[in-house]
Amino acid sequence: MVLALWVSSALAGAGVDLNRASASELDELPGIGPVKAQAIVQWRGSHGSCRSLSDLLDVPGIGAATIGMLQGRAYCGWGQGSTGASAADGVTTAPAARPIRIDVNSATIAELLELPGITEGHARAIVAERVRGGPFASSADLVRVPGIGPATIANLGPSCVADAHR
Image (cartoon, rainbow, N blue to C red):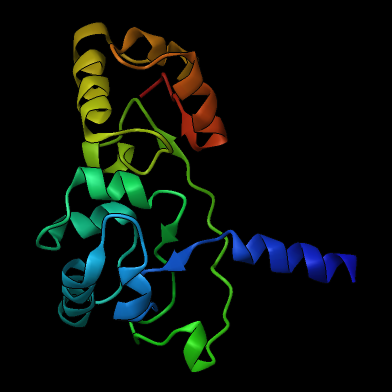
């Protein structure tokens, strides 16, 4: 019973699967609204499932600010077709567990946007500092980047790695 409650509460906080949500479910997400929701559904129909939030940068009207608002509230369920089905339709599959590990010494701007709390400005500054100052020794070394401080670094957790030998 305790395990069932834990699983239930964990799934409740998982957010919306962008590959399965209906337009009305997408509309409820921050920064989306009905026009962007329909654009996501149309994009899914022509491009298939998204693999990361940064894939949505290809959807008309969605930029880095919208992606930032979706972090922690939406995800791209891997291995799930873009059926448009939702929990309201009786689909109750859990999101596939996929740990995110982003290496700040090799990641693109789009990949850096997957990190919690990293905006497009942060991502561009990380890449610029990496070019200017060389590889980061650890994620804590991101304090070299203007606009990134200890609170942002603490929020990154184990998702952010710095493989210095690249």
